[in-house]
Length: 409
Ligand SMILES: Cc1cc2nc3c(=O)[nH]c(=O)nc-3n(C[C@H](O)[C@H](O)[C@H](O)COP(=O)(O)O)c2cc1C
Image (cartoon, rainbow, N blue to C red; front, side):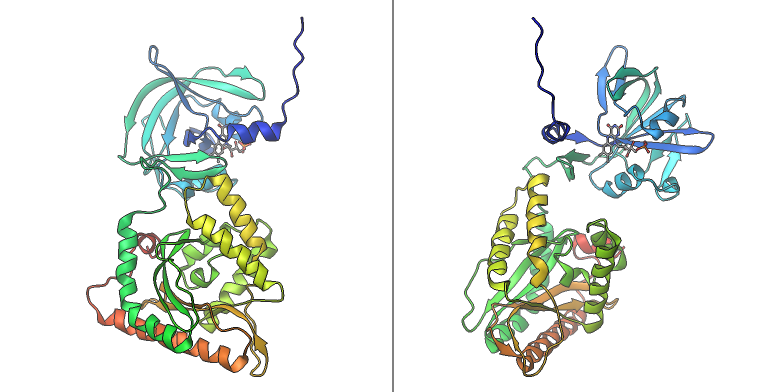
């Protein structure tokens, strides 16, 4: 009796298969046109005797059309810190091999600097497998190159292996952030007391996340346990920090925005405006109250951690939808305003951000004069923290946090 098969929905196929994580490799070779590289998640060890490995290229891949005619491959296992290499090599840039460090193997195939391992092999004729091939390869030699964790791909997002689950960042970075926050402590206490609000200091502990490392409360502001709470820095979130980050960090942040050039351009403009004016204000519009409550709830969910990439994308997407009340505008002395927050950066000598001061839980329905007072108070506080930090020889601001180490390089 013939079995009737229900057709499989390709979207569901991808989504369900995305729950199975893979490593990320780059299969490289050379031909007359130069180096070739294909980012491949389907790499697998196949047989020990004889030593065989395989990967599954799409039949219509132009890159594989070149690879299949090459005589030798190097399969580069990417490390957790090579997302940029992966993005570059899987993209269409014709000069990609000028933008990554590599050297040729004895067989001529590119060995990418910083990869975890190299597997040198020669391809067998591809085996048909639906819309893919099974590309079996004889292993000729292999070497582990670097003692570090590999890059992982899961639910369409990149991550790393951690024996303790999805930890967000090392304790060392958080502790260093808290140490820096101590320099701002007198200023945030003063601000909270005098401006009757919550005053906090935030640092970046990774290129994608800010965390609160100190806060103080005055007036009606409610105590909330925010220390160590993670806030995402993906467009449009985190603009008040990233506006003062070095260009490399700023570009990386922008590259996480929607692909359409208009959105990217308007975000770029906004960052330039913030940078020029020296502070950021978030204003709550007519729908602001309920939007802000929803945003706070989403932030809390994000901060709770242990997010899978799919869950993180959904949360960030919903947050981005609620962000349209986050608009800075000119303030009329006699206008009435409801502000979500007032933020100012503490900068190092190179004018790069070290930490962000933030006023929140501010009294509502205030006039423009009051808004301007808050702006000038927080900027004065940030300047005071800057001189404190510069006066202290024990702090090397460019080196103190892992985030800064990678971004100020
Ligand atoms: C993480 C990751 C894993 C990938 N894995 C595969 C794979 O296993 N097989 C494949 O054919 N393409 C894979 N791709 C896509 C290719 O790297 C490449 O982008 C694609 O072949 C480009 O099309 P082209 O070869 O026609 O230029 C992967 C891409 C990424 C980013």
